[in-house]
Every structure is written in C-alpha cells, then in structure tokens.
Image 1 (cartoon, chains in turn red, orange):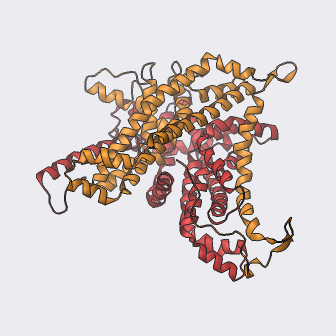
Image 2 (image 1 turned 30 degrees about the horizontal axis):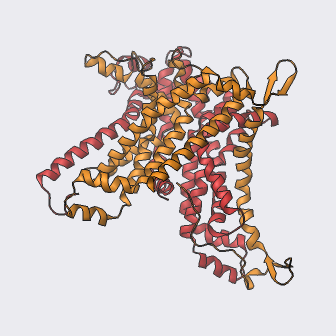
Image 3 (image 1 turned 135 degrees about the horizontal axis):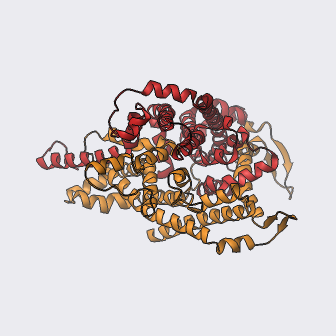
Length: 290
Length: 323
C-alpha cells in the first residue's frame, strides 16, 4: 500500500516479510510434490533410510520406471488408459450438456426456468459421496455394475458447469445478434450452432478442463461401482497398491513403484494445469464472485 | 449465495418473420391469438439432455436411498417394509454418532485454519508489497490439481512413523516425533491433508474477490491515514464477505462427506481409523462388507439431509447478519 514512487526502508522491510510469509505457504504447498519427485529416483531401501528431501546413493528412476511398467503384469498403463478414456468421455459429454442447458437458462425465458435452475444449483450441496452408494445399488438392479458406463454416466452431471455456462452465455452472446438472426429467418438450432457456440468457446474450454480434472481425480465412485482390476482408473489402482504396501504384502519394492507411479500420473496433470491456468482461475472465480 | 437469473433474455413470443415455423392457435377466450413455435420449445430441448442425466444420477439415487431405507432385507423372507425403523436404529447407533463427532472435530480444526491461511496469503498477495507474487500464487494453487488420492498417499509417506519425512526431520533436531497417525493426532493429520489440498483453491477465490474491491476505497483509506491492518479488517474483509461465505460453505460440505483421506490411510492406521470413523466410511462398510443395503441407504439419506440443513442454516444465518 506504499504510495507509488516512494520506496522507503519500511517498504522493503515489509516486502521481505511478506515474501517470506508467502514463501512459507508455497513451500508447504509444494513439499509433498518435492518429496515425490525426489523419492521416485530412489531405491526402496534409500526411501526408508535416507533424508526425504535429498537424493539417494544412486539414480534409480529408470529402474523404478521399468519395475512399475511390469509390476502386476503391466497393469499400470492399462489403468492410465482407463483414466484417460473415462475422463475424456465424461468431460466431453458434461461440456455438451452444460453448454446446452446453460445457454437455455441465459437466453430464453420459459416456464419452470427459475425452479429448474434453483434445484440444479441446490445439488451443489449434495456431495457425490452421498450419492455413490445409492447409484451403485441402482446399477446393481440394472446390471451395470463393473461396467465403464457406471463411472462415465454419473460423471456427466457437472453442476458447476451449468452455472459457468449460464454466466458465459449471458456475458458473451449479445441478445441483439440472436434477434437479428431470427429476423433473417434462422432457426433456433442454427443460431445456437453458428452464432452462439463460437462466442461461448472459451467457456467451453473452462468447463471441459474443470470436468476433466474432476473425473481424472474421481475415486469414490469407481471404487464403489467397479470390481475388475482391468477396469480400474489410476486412483483406485494406486490406492490398492498402497494398501498392499502398507500391509507389507506385494513385494520388496512396492513403495518405490507406487511413488514412481504417482509421479507419472501427476506429471501430465501438472503440465495441463500450468498451460491452462487462465481457464482454471476464470472458472473458479466466476463461481465465487457472482 | 443466491444465483438469481437476471440480464437480458429473449425468446418470449416475437412476432414477425422469425416465426415462420409457428402454428397459430386460438386461446381459450378466442379473442387473441398466441404463437407456439420453436422459440418456445427450443429452451426445453436444450435443457432436456442435462435434465435427463440429472434426474437419473442425482434425483433418482437420492430418492432410491430414501425408498430402500424404508425396508429391511432378511436372510429368510426377503425384503419387507419396516417404516422408519432404520432411522430409529441410526439414531441410537453409537457408530453413526462416533463418525459424526469425528467429522465435527475435523471441521472445527480444518475450517478456521484453512480460512485464516487463505485470507492471510490473499491479503499479502493483494498488498502487492511482495516479491515473486505470481510464482507463489501458482505454487500454492498447484495441490488443487493433484488427485486427492495421490495427495493423501504422499502425506501418508510423510507421516510414516519410522521413515516419514516429518519424523526424520524432528529426529535430527533431537525432538521425539509424535505419532501422527495415532489416536491423539489422527484427526489433525487428516485435516492437514484437506487444508493442503484446498488451501490454494480458497486462496485464489479470496484473492480474486479482494482484487475486485474498487481501488478508490483503499486509496481513500490510505489518504485518511489508515494502516495496512486497518484496511484489511475494515475494508477488504468486509467487502469479500460473500466469497468468505462460499469458502466456509464448501468447507462444511467437504467435512460432512469426508471419506477418501481416512479410507486411504486405513491400512497405515487400522487401529485408529475404524470402520465407523466417518459416516461415509461407515456407509461404505455397511454396504460392501456387511451387505446392509437398507441401513446404508438410510444413513446416506440422513447425510444428504444433514448436508442440506447445515448448508441452508449457514446461509440463512450469514445473510441475517448482513442485514
């Protein structure tokens, strides 16, 4: 809050303190990731015997990667592929559904609109964990348990996306443009596809990224509805390895394999995150500031 | 936190060439004609796909949990209607209350620490009297992108009693390491994982709200000789009330649905994290270990109701204070 152009000793003093404080919080936030990057290069023995934030006696990353690839009959890449497929389909579907209904809420007046919107946003308060077991029981009735659809279908409901697309449509699609197109005789679907959709594109990207990460990180639903090892996503698969390692069953180097697997699964999501930050922040803050 | 629909809206009966596809129909009194066309039907068609999956995977499961909860399945005789007896059982079930109590303690630790840290970090960044602010911002936000499962496993490694980083470090400093996954500290250790995961998310939300406070307000305060602390307490924090309410609301919802962290760390602390550690862990064990679907349905339904009641109560109280 120092006046522009005046840099007093006091200003530098406070800036150093502030930088230190924010640095401590950032260190706390990055600590587990730092530990992950370092540990993945160690042998199992070094993980337990050497200091966690420094490298071990030798560089063991390649050996760990090789062991990870072959452990459990090479199941790791199967899990990674499952995660990718489930997340991509869920996110694409969720984006389409949210865009359509968000546009309807923003640009049309129709009977039942406010009630519908209220009920959908009310569902933000019902955590998915509460719904997962009833969803499992429903799927058990119709024979969908242990089927990829059991993970994908419920993930199509992405409530924050409805809200986001409603706000984006309202902000980016001018009503006059739609009216002019109507006067020219364009149908509603054509107006949506050729005029509104391109204007809403950045919003679509935000919803896609947020719902993709949500599906990628999902744990409880796949844990409940899937049984076959071949169908699991990474989260459930790695957790099952972790449980085996904690019980000291599953082989001598399972801890090292888990840490390497965790690193490999985190790298793409961190890369995506760093490149698409703009969308994340706009998506998250839109929700909170309205 | 209400989400009123406002702004410009089109689509109410527009006369003219736009209505080529309209059909003219007579209204009941016959004196006026109203057009029913695509403009009226389109919003329902746009909304339909989402509404279908919403009903199938939000409304129906909730209703189904409620329906199941009214029955009891016996080894002999199959399903029979038992009214509210599952709910009476839950009410008198020490396991259920134990889980709720753990959630309460968890929430009482996690919420204030998270809010304080996020607010403090937000205020520091917002003051602009800081170096490398945007680097720190990304760093603090990053854990939000890490899958919760991976984050929990990593903290599990850090917490390990013999080999964990925390024990190692304290050991080097000559301090006897506390048993982080023991009876005394387990809830605090779990709360730390949630704080780590969501601190950055809340920090970004609060910071964005602070950045949206008009500069004139803070400039006027500076001219009047207000200190940085006064500006924070008397201008910034009151101005971002609604963002703070959102943060607390999500903390409450996250607390009630606590499952992943205790469930994942169970193999490391099986003596402390019991099958009734939180209501959600308890429902999971009821449904998948002891196959008590009806009772699990009742507890799911109660947890849904508790979430709704607590959230609405919190919103009503925070709004009343505002007036």
